[in-house]
Each structure stands twice: as structure tokens, then as C-alpha cells.
Amino acid sequence: MTVRILVLLLASFSMVSCDNEVTLEQEALKTEQRVPETLQERILRQRNQEKISGDFLDLTLSDNPKAAQALTHPDFTFNFRGLKQDQNVAYDRDDYFVSWIKNLIGESASYQYSLATTNFIGDLNKPAVILEGSTDKKDFKYAFIYKFKDNLIHRVTVYDSMREPAP
Image 1 (cartoon, rainbow, N blue to C red):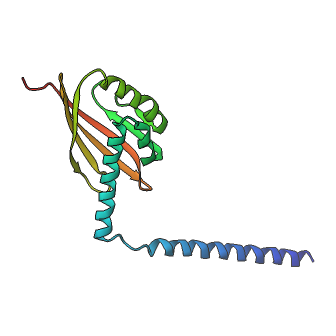
Image 2 (image 1 turned 90 degrees about the vertical axis):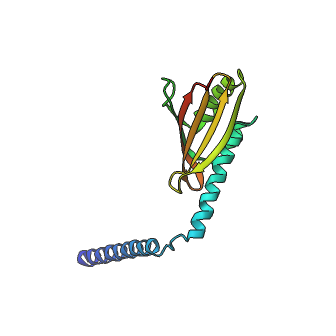
């Protein structure tokens, strides 16, 4: 009787292990059978990312910057690269929309500025938006480098190039 139970247990274990191997093989086949993205699909995806990137900036600089949060991934991070000590700090989604934007709006309200998107560059891995602008005290150029995940903005890194205006 004990031998019979042992044989049944071993047979059950073998069947479960075979089922698991089939599942792993099926998953491997699914991965291999993915159809490569066509050129047209890549172009459409890039245009969509450019639109999302531009919309993100427009909404961030609007009267309701919190609306831009819908374009971001739940694991969103923002990093502003610059020369000041308070820069080069990574902000998560909540900190960006609660703290960083509030500080930006507070600072920009104290002076007149002009700002314009001058170029979209990059590729599907890291699209970028170039913004140029000026105040009465300085000229600036920003490069917003985006990383997407699940068709949402996953990471934004901003590089700053401020300079004194020409006399």
C-alpha cells in the first residue's frame, strides 16, 4: 500500500512538472512570435510621444498643472539638472506635482518671461523637447528628455543652459 501511494505521488509530481514545462515553452513561443513593429507604426508611436511630451509641458505651465499628471506613469520621476545645489534632485510623481511645480510657479510669477518650444528631437528611446526663453535678466534653453513606459511619461530629465542676455 505504501509503495502504491509513493508511485501515485511520483506520477502526480511528474505530470505537474511536465505541465509547467509546456507552459514555459508556450510562453517562449509567444515571445518569439511577436510581430516586429512596422516603420509606419514606429512613426505613429514617435508622433504620439511628441504630442504627449508637448501636452505635458503645456499643461505643466498652464493654470492647472496638476492636469499633466494624467500623462505620467505611476512610477514617474523628474530630475532637473542644473548648477544650483537644490537642483539635481529626483522628484517622484507626488513631489513633482505638489512641491516642484508650486515652487516653479511661485518663482515665475515674480517676473515676466517668454517661453517657446523650438524643436522635437530624439527617437523612440528618448524623445526630447527643446524649450527656449528669456526674462529681463537672462536667456535660457532647456532640453526635456523623456522616457516612456506603457505609453505614459515614465521619466523626465531636464538639462538647463542659462546665460546672460546679449546687451
